[in-house]
Length: 447
Image: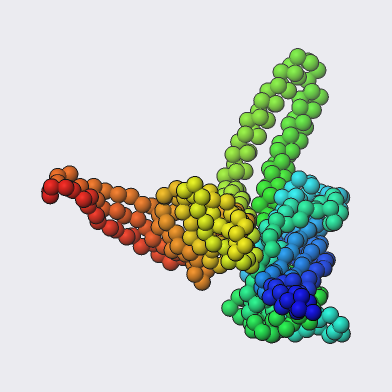
């Protein structure tokens, strides 16, 4: 009996996650992004696609954890042209050629490059056993979205790159009314989102969560590949017209000359003239559409930046953990848990304690960055020094330099560096402040 009592007490001391339920599911739907303005010609673009969202929720060390993955399949892209007054001039849709056997279909290679960035879904939830929907929603971020399925089935598409993340309890369930914090352009007004408090969220989680009625909350379309394809297609049209005129001229030259040698000579001259004409026409075409070329280059850069931001956001996610403590071995530092198990090997020159899921670590005296619990760099080593995160911000030092102020007597030096704050994606917040410090070496015998 005493043994049973001790076992009961030990069970009660185990983390809440042992008792926690795990909820998971799969949601599919057909979606359309909001109208996204193209940088020129008064055009707007929308992407229509099918998607499958796989999700899972559980608790770890009494904190909520959400994991999700997205697969998507491109249906078509709609491009709308408007005049200065906003009146619609034309609407063209471009689908993969396997779906649309017309001249305005797009090759699979182009369709595969249509991209989605900064994606989030708003999902209405339902309690187990309840016949009505709960009065709350969950905002789900599927991470960095992979390339779309085109010829293959949706189930065969590549999953998005994502990691489990742990939101605060008071940032888990969104109240029903706050769902309308999403405006007509599908951009979330985070300032308007209203969440249930921690206690209420825990109660709702305990009752069981079933996700229903998924809707696209936000998404940014990467469409530079489509614009580049349409640009090349228009250029090819100009070249075909020149070829057609050349073929007609050659045909007339041969029909008007009985002398085969003279006809061949004139044909060669026409071909050379056509080459010059094509070169001139290409230069004129590029000059006429120079703004289009600049916009496409700009969009490509922006899409690379958006992709990098999505990946950084995923890398910044972290799981709840038991307290990790610093340990030392062979002059290096690492982390171990309360039971003494090494979680992160002693491989760093110096470390700060974990705070808000990240720890500042240095690989040398002058290279500080941030790692997560998986010992993965979330922010690469690049700072002279870095402090632990507090309320999502860290103070860092960079651009360090040193000047010698005098050469006589005891050497005196002036240190200079920039100091500013960063968020968990490594983005600067606020203005840089230049700091200085003057010091001198200790000299024996005065001076």
